[in-house]
Image (cartoon, rainbow, N blue to C red; front, top):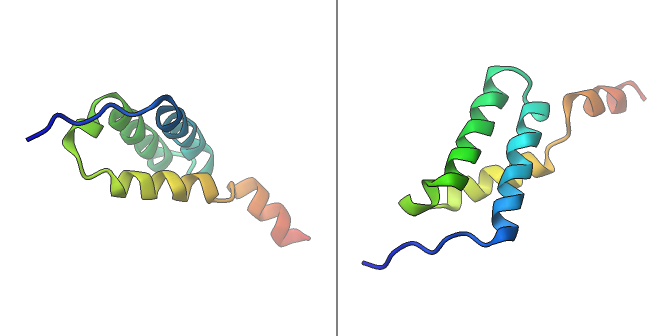
Length: 76
């Protein structure tokens, strides 16, 4: 069995950005949970392997429209 490779700087920064953004996309406990999970994954979760779900979550958070912007576009 091989040791997991550490994430490169770009991957770490993308996960951090998604963790910060999650609290804006999902205000309250859900956003906080997602944010903490992503930060925990960045710190040591990558060692567990199976990172596809985390990368899918990062993609989702980065593409999601914040609620305040969604409300403005609905009103237009």
